[in-house]
Image (cartoon, rainbow, N blue to C red):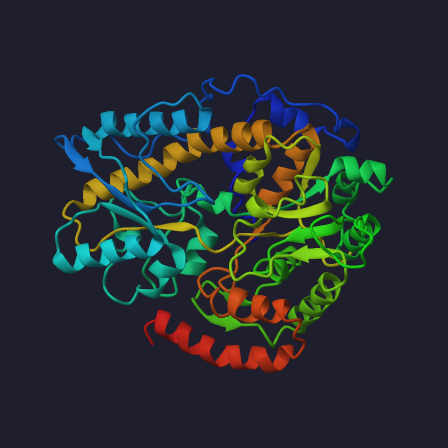
Length: 486
């Protein structure tokens, strides 16, 4: 998405704390400055956005509000936090819960957290079918929710009282893309931390970079010369057959490590190439074949990553490869593909690392691009709700308070102070989050495009792209027509 128009974080938050001020002046020479993270239990400041609370106080008579969600090891999925734990982000979400309860005289029950996304979808559909109004809000896996938009299960969020989807706490460009009819059945706003958690970033090992006397990636990013060719050059320089046995195993040094199901689409998004486009009139264009740059990028990425010294998962699932294949953590890889959420799993890593966006395709490209991966939870409202006024008031306030209070805690404290290890990494996060590139081929139709086409071809080093994309095109057209109710 073009965040020059719909920037989620920095201009939206209008954050004026000292860290952001220092980021604006940061240079690559600041890379050894460590951020003080000792006071993790402090209270996050409320940011003055200059926008008044849009919903008046209403007495809903002590009613209970319950949210259906599902468990995840890759993102935040719980909305109603009912206890303080001493971490800024969690405690800010707790304060959000209590503020809404007091404002509307209602009680948030603990979220109903299903074990799997399939379980949550089943619970949701069964509840709607029975008309029991068991849930007031459901955070469903985005592609699961997308697949049932024509079943009559969802309430049109745009028609709820008090909800104003033009406000900056709702992600207008994304919501326009994922709703293919004139109804808003699925929605993202600042309450959906998973959208940020699943943004992909590139990490580089500073110790290896310095030891190999390689260029500083921070400088390249800031100069606008951080490209796929430059990354490949640096990665090749890091490769070493440490075991000396002529094969590539767990003892060797790699230029890049990542997951097979994200590698190609990471670089497509970084090149700002969209496989499926939706315009403001809900016209959908499949670009798999019509845009020749897609095949060009696929071929170049496949050529590079099938060279010796580039490692990626060979299993069907690679969402958590960094937990079992810890090449980056043990100084055996110069570059590593991570999500913003998984960066938090490296807090105990001994060697220093930096966070940068994936590289541009070439130097002519003006902006960087960041892939938002499939698997996030999207807001849905059951069609069976009995009090639209309450649902609308709570949803608008949830997203407003997330915009005003939670996002500063998440972005400025959790990401910039706790995850990043220097002031320039924090500057890189601004670039990364400002340039998220949401593609239906990576998300709602990931079974056909991201996994079904690119990952399947990549893992087997297939090069007959046009032939396979043509087959995908036919089934994809059918799925899109179904999603649009045609």
